[in-house]
Amino acid sequence: MAILRFRTYWEDDESVYRDVAIRHTQTFFDLHNAILKSYEFDNKHKATFYRSNDAWQRGREISLEKYDKAYRVDPLIMADITIGSEIKDPNQKFIYEYDFNKNWHFMVELIQVDKEENKKLVYPCCIRTEGISPSQYGTKGLVDKRLAEMEEKYDLQPEAMKDGFGHEGEDEDVVDSDEAGEDTNEGNDGF
Image (tube, rainbow, N blue to C red; front, side, top):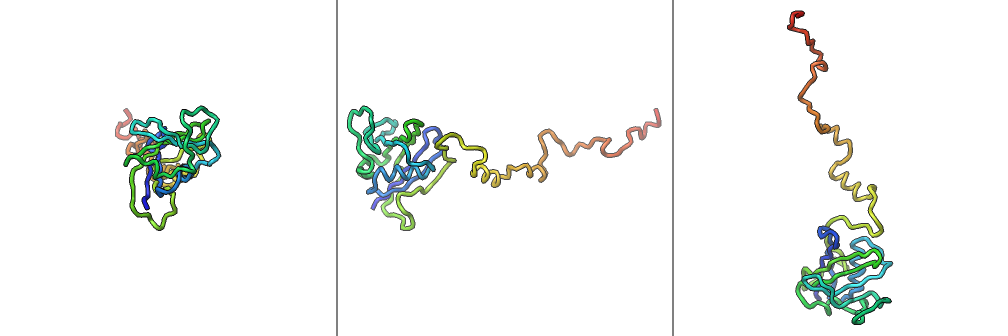
């Protein structure tokens, strides 16, 4: 059974992506749920895929359901369409839209096909995460747990100052003569 690996880029920042592995016999509905899970989004909103090309132009729509909007051609329904049936190119691309009010856009690209599945994985699954996921409902606060983990990892806390790191502009080698306790009149013989 073929395992397809898709890289899903967040449109606003291509350095933020997730790699999702899925069986070619699974549906676009399965891929939809795997993408949402990998980006820590809920599944409460409308969604659709578009078949795409190398220029990221929108082709045939593969929708979660048929929505109240004008279609040139009725969309395919995610739950009815297997991933393998829509792979026409070894670098097949899709555009994924989620939450039509917030307009989340992701570029989905086939990056690898494996002939055998990994028995330790439950498909579909996220097998690689790069970058901090955008927050679905606004900006993440500064108290986000991942920021705290970064602070810990890179020791961004003020305690770093006591480990020999001073403030900008400080020079430890220059000692003020008054601080050293020297008499500035010494050697002047009173003149």
